[in-house]
Image 1 (tube, rainbow, N blue to C red):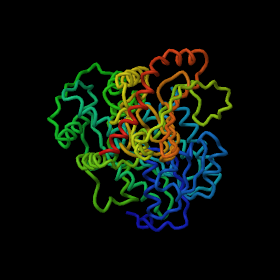
Image 2: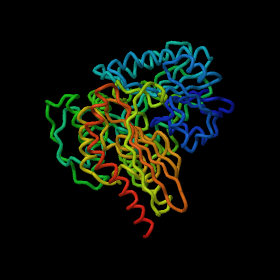
Image 3: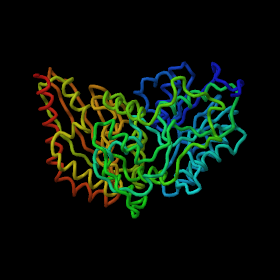
Length: 499
């Protein structure tokens, strides 16, 4: 190993982390802050990170990677910039979108005299690579188009609590004791634990000299996806899975099936499946150990990574989740941050109730809504709506929650996302189901003369006549869903209070 590139203290450096509200980015910021580093985050919506434990210890720049002025503000004075952005499934032409984003980022980094870009990409050594992996590789090339050195760390399947790959593996194994699978389950892959990915990303921040190279990072084992399924089954205490390979399951059909069986939506499952068609094995000629030594405790094996992820899930200690990144909504939906004066018609279903149950007990039920707790009645209607959403490419109900008890801004809750939360007072959820418009569900709590007043509003901003017709078509169901929900929240809170 070149001793000049060994890890050294990095005091005084300013680090920029893009994608800080995402799965890897949120954990990386946490680790960098713990190490005492000066961190700036670049996010589209600052509200999404305000309830992270590290939120008040970082500098926040709000903007988009498609806006050069926003990038210039974010990169000013930065020594090392982490590029953790992607646009898979944001559009059918995601390759072009990713290329433009990376090129603009590289140009702005050069203008800001950034010393190092660190990019987390995907192993792409197989010539028969997918569109997803090809785009990841091209992103690296575009980042390297300026004079700023780029250290590209290419990873395969990332195993960790809350990762999309882990959720897909977990639910396939749990729900299907007998599986008909495509041939790609026999392809070789080299998974890596999220703990080890973060180790390499953190270590790259401490290199004395900038690096301009591509390094593959992988765990200590090369396995097939079928072997991973069996390892998971054994660790989860399940019987060995019966896997029957068939030649007719295309990536499109496989991703549709995964979208129905697991919480991972079809739009996200497809690039994951397509990536498995290629052999994703680290190239020994691109070893990262030339600049970063192995972790002192060694790399986690596949079984160790799965076991650690299962432990984190069981303990409800999932710091970030694949669903933290917003699901690409239908193309006709505007951004959540659009102002009220944007010319929208707002349709509402308003309910309210006053109860003698303490406000704190009511809030416990409201904050625990969704996921395993459900939606306080009318379960079959919620199930049907989730199924319909899945059928048209939405996220459906099975996405669940990051934590069964506590919520923070930006969390996903089935096919909703927490847009705003003020603990003990207000919860506003934004709908990420496929809709001809935008929808919110909001709860507001106040205390009056020793009683608790609960206000519940379901709001919908329709897009054109089709959106208005949709609202009036589903309005009859609101008479079952929303009054029942409010009554059952109070009922559950009263029961909890009297225990």
